[in-house]
Length: 285
Image 1: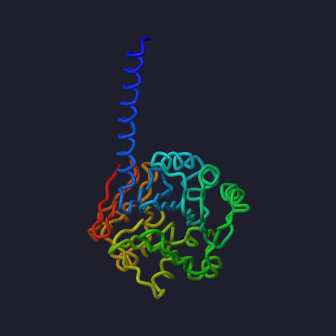
Image 2 (image 1 turned 120 degrees about the horizontal axis):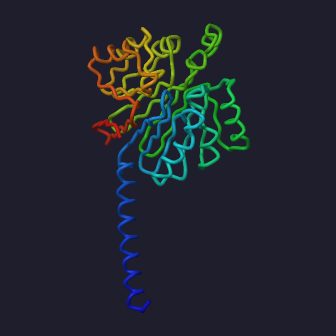
Image 3 (image 1 turned 180 degrees about the horizontal axis):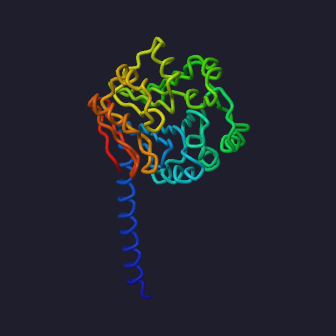
């Protein structure tokens, strides 16, 4: 091939590379919503896996089931993320801790936050093995307040763990960590799988639970205490992590309709919430 032909080929390759990098940049920019808070509830069936991004800060709340770890890591890598600032596992049911070991093995995780009890599932035991020697693993017995980027975060453990463990045979759900994120004028509430005992404890605590957005508890399972929760939180948007096989209960959806709260679910696609500090927009993606 002549030198001129080689020059043409190289010029074409360079042009294609520039185009590819431009597309990649736009893609990452769309995912990261530069300068805004982005919450992505992944579509992983009846399970929780939520990526929270603000500037270069990345949080991961739960990791879905065992086979979802790879999907979570792939999603992060597609966004150009190679480091998680904080991994929060709300509780140790398989649909929340399932993919955690895979995430720990394939991503750099700076901090891990857990509830203070022991799980009994194999997914939890595998996860614990990946935490051996990790310098920052915290099991919460008191609320944790921290600032990451422009996010003000408070993480609440169970107010009375003994009451929960003494009165409930399967107490994992009510041991869920509850997280509140403030960003600008807006507040976001993540409720894990809390049920009636924990909801009553929460609402009896001296805490301002008013939030603009809520991740509904326990995949949309109905419980009469939800009405008290919604009356206290008064959200303008609700997200439910559920699936076509295990959808949110009709009573829960009816309650949200009565309160005129728009609801988004992960049945078919991820739910993406974007906030600029003053306005919240939610979409399926």
